[in-house]
Amino acid sequence: MMMTDDNKSFRTNPRGFKLLVCMAVLSGLWLIAASRVHVNASWSDGAWGYFSLPMLAAPKRGDLVLFDPPEDSGSPIPYMKRVIGLPGDSVAVNPERRVFVRGDFIGIAKRHALNGRALDAIEPGVIPPGHYYVHADHADSHDSRYREIGLVPRGRIRARALPLPDLPWLGLEGPLAKPEEARP
Image (cartoon, rainbow, N blue to C red):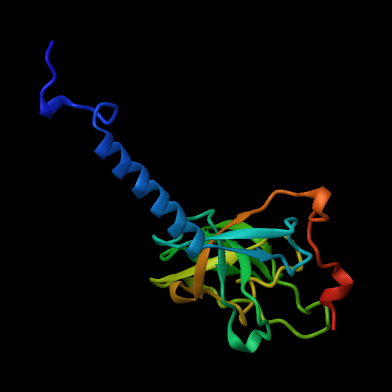
């Protein structure tokens, strides 16, 4: 059977194969340039660091994201939390400060931070368009349970985060900060 130009594959068309490889290499270089490794400055998360990937689409429930906390939070570094609530989801807080998203119990909003500062629970309501409820499972996590963090606007979400594996032979194992380092 004779091959025509119409049914040649990449294996028989070196120019097309080279173009495909070149595009893959350029895409990989772009991903490396647009991404960064962040060292975990929080002892409440189990990873020593995380790799940030550009956020090309709206966050989905369950995504781990890096976001800029509000300026008055006092944190100069981005926070990493999991997206729990999406626009249109309901947020409720009962008198015991138990927080619910879509009717599911999420956690308890503590009355005081580790340093003794008073904490106000998030206002109940519906998550507006372009905002997200972010959360971490740790009881002392500074997340959307508290009014000062609140619902995170899409514009403050920097990237999608992927936890990095432990590398004990390099001394990179678990969180690098300890609880006592987080207290003023």
